[in-house]
Image (cartoon, rainbow, N blue to C red; front, side, top):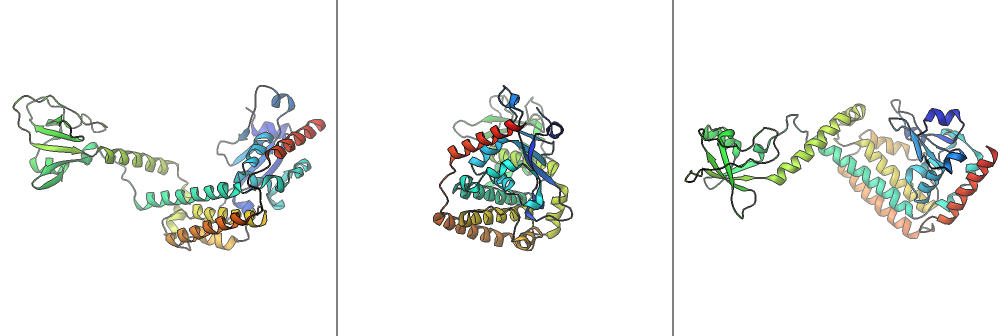
Length: 353
């Protein structure tokens, strides 16, 4: 696998651009500098048995695509790759003139409605997911199965932990047996002298413990274990603390500071993508540097309520649908033309290197 240093040392990079917020014109003093580009494998490696589709640094904020991979992604109207191809001159570090042969008329199609639209929807989902995590933080101590168990009590039910406290019982002296044909229900027995398995053998157990109950023992109650609720909790607990461990603290603090309790950056990109899709469908142009900068940065600053943004995003999606219904763009890119273009560009490069 080649490294970025090798690509540069061997002069294999044929396109290098500043990407992300600085290309969009949406950068602020704290913005990072992302770089994307295209490289060309040496002839012997391209035609050999090893193929390197892309090279990136560990944080993935610097990524270079091999020409074939770049053209493949163009052929499916990938948003990131279309943005790279249409990077404004002010953000282009280097571009080989052979790449000027790639004409937008061959590449752009109505697929952009789906690729940009789905990307936008994914940003909404991310914003919703973060809002849920912020509004419903999870305690660091993981709940046990006991918190998802209930027993019948009087004319209703009561949480198992409360029931045990009322009885001054310990869970390890409890015994459970299955109740036939009643999923999730168990007969509950109690005896501090017998060797019962308890309700759970260990605090971190993920299964109910069953015991051998002597014949004639008194059943104290019927226990219900909400297994689905416990499974959902474990999944959400794991996702929440994984998010806490990996989250961008500066971005999280920004989300907290504007007080709207959603990821404003995700919502900003939702509108950027939807507006770019509308421009592509209407004008056949990929406008990377955003003319609606003030509006987008207003979203990022938390100047809008979450519900209002969702309503506006829905309206933008409907507008996008209408634009693509009337668009003169082809239904999909001309794959044969893109394939021929990829071949010609590569052959020209190999002739001069």
